[in-house]
View 1 (tube, rainbow, N blue to C red):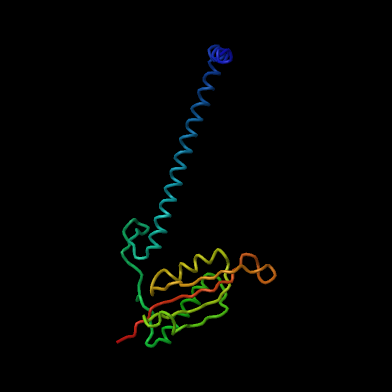
View 2: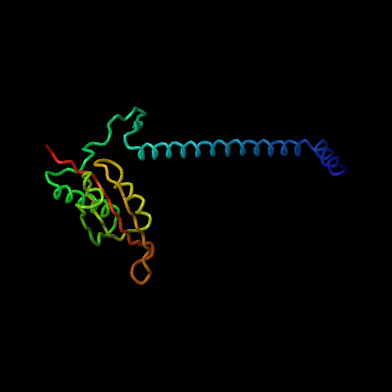
Length: 186
């Protein structure tokens, strides 16, 4: 109690000290307001980015373009693998998977087309691919394969970290099975 009385007495006897104390309190209050506004804007940007990412994952969702107008154009192409025969469709699937791996900076080690398997009666073609890819690029690879047309499905994913002696750090050996449906043209 005695300390606060001395504090009040010091401000009563010196108006300059009182004014500077008031200025410090006002500056602290303005700093708190500016910090809260900055935090709000950052959260708004995160929300906007998350909304755009969700729209990308949903695929055909209507999302605004740069001007704020709705973008009504969806992915172009067929939902099925293209090709006159099942082998041509299998080759197109291999080309799509290899293209996605190389686009993300990966190295394809091997590919194998499975024209006869569990899903072949339903018209599905599968490609088993073994590749090496950087760890951060794996998510982009999976997104590139499953987003867009034709519809592709990653049915099996095996990831193995490579040892320092066999590859640079961060490299992964990935084996994935990708399937797509082919319909015979009539």
